[in-house]
Length: 330
Image 1 (cartoon, rainbow, N blue to C red):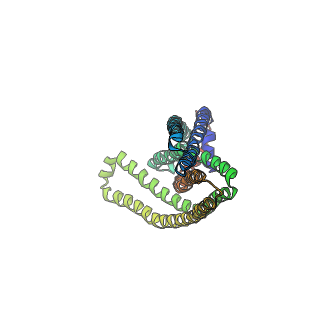
Image 2: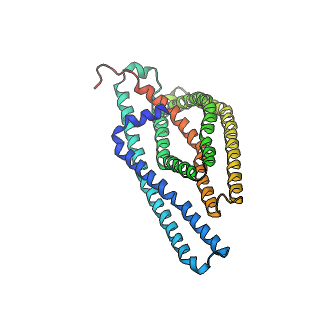
Image 3: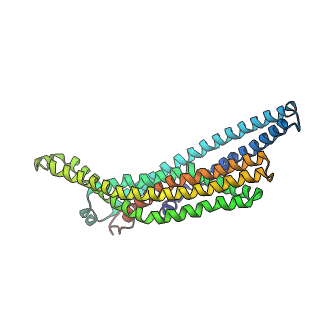
């Protein structure tokens, strides 16, 4: 993640957008947490009426107002989500503009000997793959993952107040998941680097050949170029097979560990409700909060996969930025 942090630091001029994204993510998380409490009150109110402690007519007004409150909270959450999403989209495009311009400026300042050892098309391909991968991940993180993580922190605080063993189980999900991910990541990224090298070389050669197609045809090199292009993409398939197998095997292990923990959580909530520790409304609220914490955990497979691709791409980007510029560069 250090390289992604470096990306954000290098675009520090975007701090107003970063701040707006964080503020609306916090608002969205807070509004989302209103729903479980309203559901708890509605459930307990209905149970009281059904069990004869009060009449249906006496609680009808309360149920109506709780329904309106649920609607208002959901509507406000939708508005906050879309405003935050707008800032996230603008931030990602501004970030892409900054990174792309900086990359181009760096290339223009490099000495000729750097380009003598590079395929022009490969340099162009890196601009698209590296920067697009980084900005796509950061956009997804700002629009989806950040609000969810703030929501999880709030869920852990609430469950601690109600029943601390539940918090311990929920909190244990993340270190277990990250440990299993760490076992996966190093090997996966090594294979991703190999695959990126093949893709860059193939796409780079493609750009060179199409850009000078007259020269290619004059040397009757079409078959040779096509075979070389196909061979490199064939190697990416060979690399992908063990890479994908390893990833999904470890993802199955991660998912199984999560499933076991949630089995214990649900069993514990059901038994505590059965023995009177929680009301039915409390159980509904805690299950709803648990499911809110569950969603980010199971999204982490996608987040980690996208992050690893962004990290692998950022290595090529910063490798260019770390090159020594020509002394006479403007």
